[in-house]
Image 1 (cartoon, protein in one colour):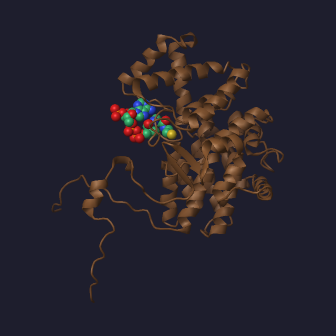
Image 2: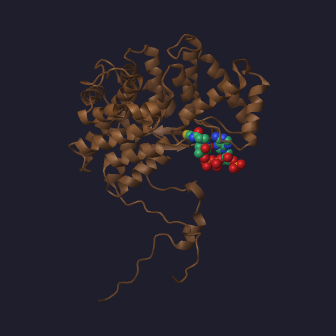
Image 3: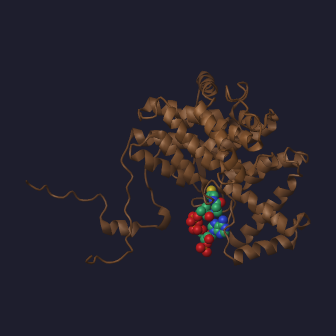
Length: 405
Ligand SMILES: CC(C)(COP(=O)(O)OP(=O)(O)OC[C@H]1O[C@@H](n2cnc3c(N)ncnc32)[C@H](O)[C@@H]1OP(=O)(O)O)[C@@H](O)C(=O)NCCC(=O)NCCS
């Protein structure tokens, strides 16, 4: 047997060690045409986020991300009809959600975990589950996009001990995704203004290049594994409080401050003292900071403004509380963070206050993030499958020197 000369690695060990960066900070780990993010801005396939938040709907943005271009009116109508026709869940998924009622009630299971399992189960019955062909990927993306809000709605019905809303058709066909999601969770059609605020939040959450969950999905897809597995992995990554779970934790933190300091403390030194204690104990304040945006997250002020406008108008909102107090407290916390730490809020901070204002239960905030980010994940999974090379980085070994057993 002849031995071929060893192929030189693309990057030498010395070069790799020189560019090592903990948490991959500043490292380019792949190529994408889906999204571009930098301190100066955020673009989905070339469209800037303020432009999209102002002028597009979530379904248009989902089409842009999944199908690759801005939809014409006939393409959009076709896409929306496809989504509506795919909303209902297979019985096996609904049965699973209903069977988890006790675990959800006891807190043993949380909605993000149930959602992850639902996506897995959906994969077992999807006719395209084992195909990574482009057309199959697109069909699966649309089914996931259509069905995830139904999963969230059914889960909330089970938590509330109500009959399942939209078991046969996945809600109300006349409603767009954001409004239908709120309808399925509550049984009431939401005010237009509420539906639009949720719609914009879905636009803002839809895509963010190589964030932890998308990178997870791409790693899974890069082994040529299937889309449902890659999305389930994305959900597991998004759940963490350093990533998507921060929208729930940000609201929990505000509730904690309000409880510890009292409602009358907003605007007073009591909140400064609470924050100082958090700094002294090196506590991470959720909804603040970002790996890429060190000088502010472009999405945060967009959602803050919309959420605050809803809160200002409505003191008897579905949450049953005077919502504006949360924004006033949130603004004070933001000010202290900026003055003392020079750290800006990320989009999860206003999201918490905004969803709370609308009476959305806190454990559903990150699942709603999934309902949006699934578009980005699927766009990346399809992009990875279309031009694949397995993602397999190196590690910097810090263990024992070689030794005899
Ligand atoms: C988003 C996040 C994970 C980014 O992490 P990162 O890029 O590794 O940021 P760093 O840890 O390098 O932050 C730099 C410094 O700011 C501090 N910092 C960053 N975010 C902070 C926060 N939310 N609260 C308190 N301090 C924070 C870090 O402790 C670090 O301080 P040090 O230099 O004294 O150790 C981090 O900011 C965080 O944990 N935020 C809270 C969770 C959150 O909101 N996640 C949603 C992100 S969209």
